[in-house]
Amino acid sequence: MKTVVAISHGYPPEWNMGGEVSLHRMLKEAKGDKHVLTGTEKEHEFEGVKVHKIDADNVLDINTNPNRIAEQLKELKADVVIGQNELSLATVIAARMIGAVSIVSVHTPPLYGRNIMQALGKADCAIYNTRTSAIEWGEPNALVVHPPISELKNKTFNGDAYLLSSSLVNKGVKTVIELAKRNPDKRFIIIRSPAEPTHGLPNLEEVVKDIKNIELKPRVPPEQMEKYFKQARILLVPSRYETYGMTTIEAAGYGIPTVHVDTPHVREGIGEGAILVPGLSVEATGQGINTIEKNYELYSENAKKRAEWLQVRQKIEMQRFAEFIENLRPLNNSELNQRSRHMMMYRRRR
Figure 1 (cartoon, helix red, strand yellow):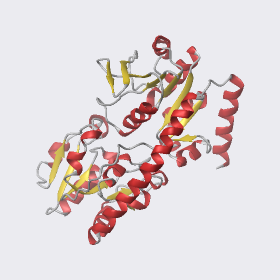
Figure 2 (cartoon, rainbow, N blue to C red):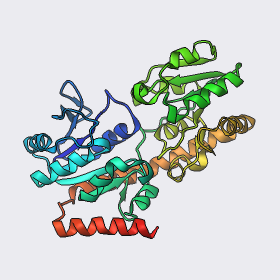
Figure 3 (cartoon, helix red, strand yellow):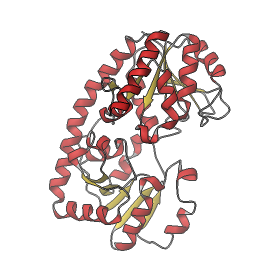
């Protein structure tokens, strides 16, 4: 069995964003020793994964010095190294320095993925969160692991609130605020994001203080989201763009329907189990809410059925991931150059 080390700027339970939660759930499925290097202040173990403070000055710097990271990987006796987001390039270089296999975990399409483009060209392989993303990046036959959700429970909720699970601007917080103004008799919940200082409204509390039907709630770990799902009637995801939508599927497991931005990635997830609309559209999101409310039981049942189907697919993908990790080896220079050329040629043909 191999020692697997993941590298990310944040990691649960301190940092509960979708990509990091997905990374953790994947990592748990790997065999052997599992470690994470991240921006934590205290070393600890979380659900079988040993979490270490990364030796880096800035975990959000795509040009982070890989030398110190390589030393940490050597100490951990890493066989396979998985990097994502801003630390992808440093991860790939550090892994090659010690002879370990390098993987980039891709959670974004090329349109939004300039920060990982160079890393992808140098990595031994990549794992993509949707088949659409794999095709767009030029690796249609690469391993795809759709972001895994927690085990479904035999529960159905029917609250009274319209729920937005992230307070970021790109997630549609302005859209939901406007909907709340137009529907003062409806209850709205907005869950605050840890990325709000850089990607949220600078004065969110001031903006909503006089809108009595909006409640701001603190973000909680995924395993505690049930406290909000219990209150939810419809989940709102009127984002600018989404590359999958893990929370939507979690909600669907409780029979909570969603009005969701429509993208090719999303169709691989909640897909037909939601009302799909253009991003950041107040009018379309409002119409989606009305459509669900006219036949709520049908849309609730469709959401739950979709979540159950996705869970079956997830079990198969998790098994493939564990087997994939065990069979990896580093590419030689010739193989690495060939992989990079094939990706570029495929993208150009499209």
